[in-house]
Length: 264
Image 1: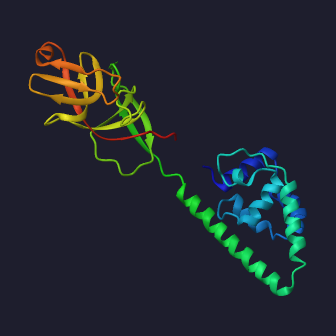
Image 2: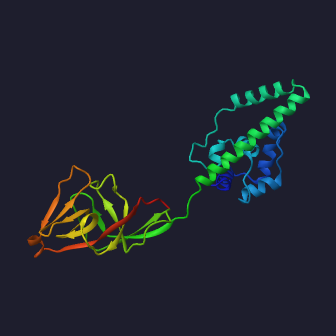
Image 3: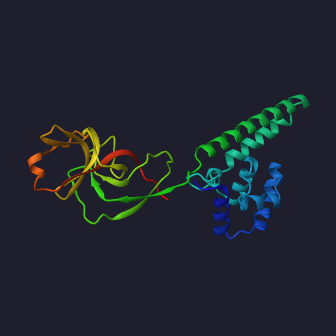
């Protein structure tokens, strides 16, 4: 999600507008809607020091002819809907309010002031809730198959990014390819491993066997290893102890955590 300042600077650059241009364009709307707006306000918004209140968001969206939600940074179309209904509603409210006596006008003012306060507080809470977290780079080694096996090779390393700060301590990270461990592990997920193993009894491990890598639930009864998928459409892979005497077999490590990578 972009910031208000980023969106404001973007539209100003595209429309080749200076701050003085926006101030001049805003004057008719200031008079029409009785909104206070000056050079100091605009400079603070452009520099990202402060965000505008709802009145000034409305004013700037009118001046720049973009939607208020887009200007606030949300991933929505920038095109502004027709102002006809909006203007008509404001005019209706204004026409009605002037007909009220002073006492009822004061009640209306207090009511709308409370509504505006609640609305601003709600927008602030939503903004805090969806504020982007700082991303951390994770170096991911090896391609791992969650399917029928993936021939590995040169241990290439690729950068991925996470927005979680609660991951468990790990020795290495690798990536899942395939859907055999769904719904627990999805295609493209990053899995974190503790190297080595003990008491193999159905936990998820990464296994190298016969030139391929696998991520599976691993069982051992003394005579054989069973590599089992969570997705029922995949058959078990059974490796007998006699099979690994002349074929490379290695339990790389136990899966202790996972996350879905995010774009930087």
